[in-house]
Image 1 (cartoon, rainbow, N blue to C red):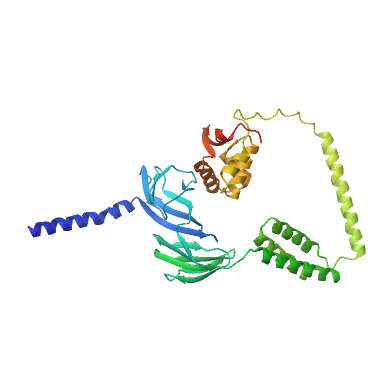
Image 2 (cartoon, rainbow, N blue to C red; image 1 turned 30 degrees about the horizontal axis):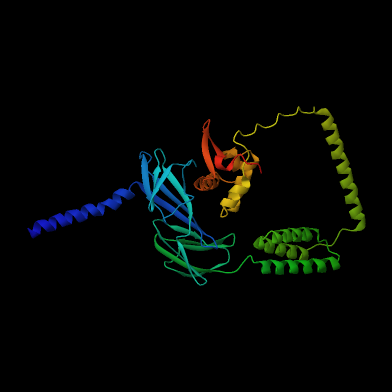
Length: 365
């Protein structure tokens, strides 16, 4: 009797051992890219290959909540998904490759000033840390280490990956103000020496504008460029040479103005266009949206303002063209706004019309 029980137990163990392989056979992980931001938010880009004959495929994800999840096929077209627990099930019929993108804060933790990222990667992990980060420790020997636009970049092998790092204080108001003052001093010294500081002054003006807007990192970078420009400034052109430049510029301006007037007379005045048809649902109550959804991202707010200017609706490709962003980024923003109950999608002639929902319509701004 005990021998029979052992045989049954072995058969059950063998059957159970085959289940993960049967599930994982539906997809093959290719790469995992994690972009980590200074506040611990992580943008996930997960690429997998799938069998195009399968109607659906289930892919385990990293984390448990995916508010802005977007899955596209190899042609960049978004696919329908259903999330259950840690897994998303994708309507993948006809697709041979999937790109899964979303944001999560569940992969990072912080103790004092030390941040730690933990993830079990099924493929090579490409990790991009915040600007100014200092790596303290890694659980595995990296395949490569470098920087991309000033951000530390690491590639780790598959497995249990853990990276600890510290983010230095960059982009602060104090650093920006210090850089601006240094640029002002360099420009003043260059002026005293009779150097041409036109470019340096333009950069300094941009730095001050960015500082006023709270873009401290940008202000610091522009001020540093202004200082460098002032230090490397060339002598001003002589008076005679300046006179020639002024005369030549005036001649060019007069010639361009003459051509403009001539062409304007030849071109018929266009007939006035009829006013754009107003939306039957009324204008967008932008104030109500921003009051209720105070945690919206800056780019999401800009999309809502654009929809308000367009009478509350615009096609998805118009949103993408207006903000000059990739298709996946545009759909990620749209999905976030749909999840927040601000917009809805309507199919018009095979295109996606993005409309502000009725509860935010009909009240004048």
